[in-house]
Image (cartoon, rainbow, N blue to C red; front, top):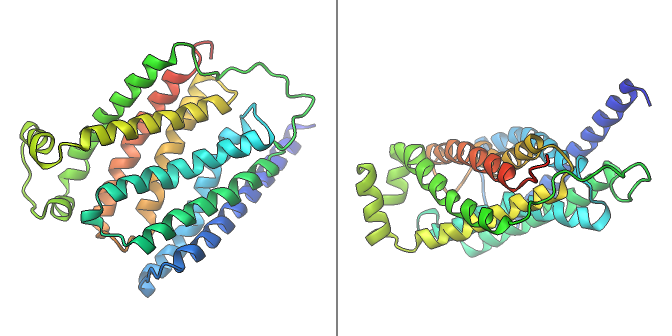
Length: 295
């Protein structure tokens, strides 16, 4: 097959993946609509514009590990569902629950958001696997697997879970917490404490269980990185890039572009910059660390 024909087929399949993601988002929006989330006309217009861009970018990001996967059929579908729902919805919403005293999402709205995320993954993942011809293993797919999770991964897993805490608090303080609107939203004041005073008070008096909670999230993020590493058949830098983009884009892009009825626009923007930068760093390092050294 000529290079031009291969490129044309790939572009066609990527276009179909974009359409699949768009449909998944539209159907997911219908689920959220049942939870009585009301947007203003301006927010509705913003959501419509964002829908196209988010669907396109998310489809491209998720398509890459599927294209480069050495898995096929239901195994690949399951992994793609796990990664999409885990990154885009589950990891975001468990933190929403933790900080819900500030966010104040009602039970019906929360269930609607989670249901919409699950529906998106259940629609997009199998369609994407089918679109890219990964439902059945082909005779020509006998390449050596490169991105196997390394032996002795337990120590690396623990180190990454701890490293996530460092990344989370550093970017939280030096990025999101530098915005007055964010400090006011979560603490009720725009005052900012010095670095060491801020974390001393946070860990000892204000929120002593935040460290074990974020350690749990670090372990879950590392598990999702392992899922992406395990499913891919690619060089180390490619896998590292795939994990970084999957974490950063799927988590931050909807936050930055879709209207958010639960927090002020500037607060959402501060979190967009915080999450996109921190997860790009953590995802890239997690993918690199958990990749087989042979890659």
